[in-house]
Length: 354
Image: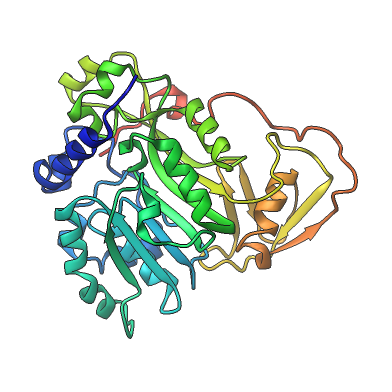
């Protein structure tokens, strides 16, 4: 099935630039964030300008921990909400770049750069916005291996060539860097007739990747071991759209992808352990790497080789003690599986977005 890239890009620009004027204009709840943010993020959000907030269309929280001093790229930055949050957290020594292809959204983001610079007590702006297509990141003038973190909030599904987006992200990240992003996924491949529907595409549904295709795309790009941070099933409460999508199920999922050499396709056991020091800001008692790795402060935790690398060869290294070597392989690490990596709500019910 072939989709005309330029047609889709024009449709997305029109949808997010002209048809939508605020988040309440969305016809489904796929592009919304129901969970309340942690307090320190909520405190920053209280300082974000109302117009920026009104034009937010994300589906998750794409702000991981330990951001001070990082250089960050936001793919599909929209009105700039997540960029402004990140600019506060990276501080004056950090840098945040937002890229978006919709003029109306970029106008809002640029309008409030000075406002947030002053709000956050910065001497000069550490955030900028560039017009561009996330499927053509080579046109942004960014150097390979130059970014610490790439974030994105419910935008990759709007791209036609998702494989290229992931490949470019891998190319731009430094070794040990991370792509941390929320997006919409489906439990099966979306039929071609639905992919041609401009409203379903703009509502972040018909461009959603089948979850197993995403895993293969990520691994092909070099992100060998994608990790789910959190997930929720999406309930669609628009009767017309329910009729169109039929039995398709959609999920909002936050993934973290690390650019690390030597990650294995499965979790392997080398008899290694780690102990969290409790030193990551805002996480004194425990740190969650993903939805199944919780590290209580001071407790020795046995980990697979991939998890060991994700902590030892990234910005988290100084916050852990590491035990063991790579000398002996003990086989597969218990707990690995090939099922869909995210679930529906408690007892299988859908989780509605309020």
